[in-house]
Amino acid sequence: MATDSAPGPHPHDGHGRCEIRRLKVCTVNNLLFPGARQAVQIVRRRVNRTTGKISLKTIYAVTSLAAEQAPPARVAQLIRGHWTVEALHHIRDVTFAEDASQLRTGNAPQAMATYRNLAIGALRLAGVRNIAAGLRRTARDQTRTLTHLGLT
Image 1 (tube, rainbow, N blue to C red):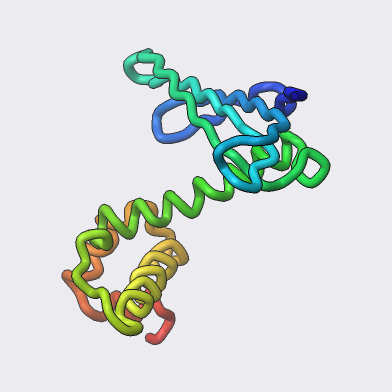
Image 2: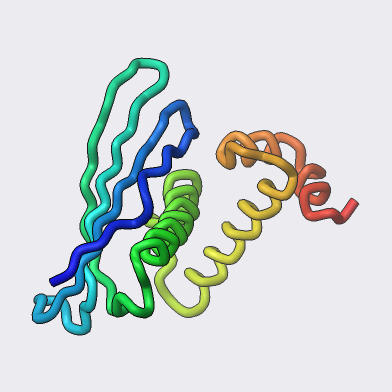
């Protein structure tokens, strides 16, 4: 079982904190996850720049990609891409309460997800960083919706 790490820790700044992620990857066989070829450990160390509080979080993952297909740097990219998707889901769930939606049949759930993504995308293109605040502002003036969509 070989272990490898992504090249050095890279600090990431944002949201009032500095974060360093360390990634360890090892080749695995015979895990309880069928098809798993690599196991991954990610340790995130965050420092809140305002309070100085340090937090550590360890996350584990598995992938069916072999080490030749996904060396540690590629695994790190794939995980980062997944977090981007999760960030969008977080916005849809928190701002639109998507997980509480009672739409369950036909195309309604997919259609509503598309409309939510359209709203988020239009607001992002308009330079809005806080989607919830952007939705509230847009709701106060219906013509803003058309402006965000480039229809006026």
